[in-house]
Image (cartoon, rainbow, N blue to C red):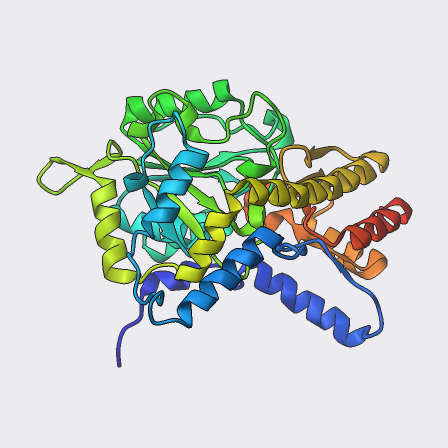
Length: 408
C-alpha cells in the first residue's frame, strides 16, 4: 500500500469554511423556511460587468472559428494580458510583462509558491491569517504538529490584535519567508507606505522574501496606503506580489489572477549561489500548469479598458458601501470595529471575552446571519468576528436591520 504524505495529518480537522458550511447546513435542515443572510465567505454577489461579458462573448465566438481558434496557450499567460497588466497596474514601478505570470487565481499561486523553498525554510505569518498561508506550509512539512495553543511549532506568528492596532511587529528572529496581506483579510486593516517600508527594510537586511497578497488593492480609498509593494524602494529585490480578479472584477467563478516575480528576487541554491525565483517559478509553471483559459484572459484584459475600469469601480463601490453599513451597525452596538474603509471586510471585537464560535452560533440562530469566527483565522483571531461587504445590497440592508435589534 502506498504511503501518503504524513504532513497532512498535521492539518486541523476541518477547513474553516467547510466547518461553517456544515453548521449552516445543519441549521437550514432544522429551519427550512427561514431566510439566512450569508456574509461569511467572501464570495461576490454582483454579476460580471458588461465590458467583461462582451469580451467573453467575443472570445467564445473566436473559439468557434478555425481561423481564430486558440488551443494550448503559454503557461505564463498570453502576452496581451501580461503587457496590459504591466502598463495598467505597474506603470513607473519597474515591472515588465516578463515579470507577470497569469494564473487561475491568487489562492493557487500563494499556496504553490512555497514549493520553491527548502523544507527547513523559516516562515512568518501574521495572526490572524488567511488559512492557505499556514496550511500550504503544513502540507510541505515546515510546521510540525499543531500545539495545544493552536499554533504550529515551526511557524513564526506575528499577532495582529486591537492591542497593537492590528499592525504586526517585525519578527524578533530571522525568517526566510514573510506572508503579508494588505488590505488585510480577515481584519480589513491596511499598512501605510511608511509601515510597509519597514518590512521591505527588514527583508533586505535579513535576505528574506515577502509574499505580498494584494488581492484587495482595488478597495483602497486612503491616499497614504500603497496599492503595490513595489511602490516601496527596494521591494523589487525582496518581494513577490499576488493579485486577483476575483474580488475586484467578480471573477470568483471565472478564475484569473497573477503573480509578479521580478528578476531580482532570489534564494540560495544547494551550491551556495543565488537563484532567481522568477526562473524557478517559470520552470514550475511550465511543468505543472497549462495556463488560464484564453477566453478568461480576454475577459481579464477587458477589466483594464476605460469602460471596464469604470464599471468594475461601480461594483467595488457597492461592496464598500455594504461594508460601511455593517461597520456602522456594529459601532452602533458599542463594539470596537476595524476594516470596512479600505477593504470589504469588517472585523469586530467581541464583548466580554465572548468566543467567536459562540458568537457565530448566536448570530446564526438569533439573527439568521452567517459570518466567520475569528478563531478560524488563527489563535489571535479568537475574540473577533468577520463579516463581509460582498453580500447583495438589499440583503445587507436587511442584515443591518437585524443587527440593530440583535441582543449581545
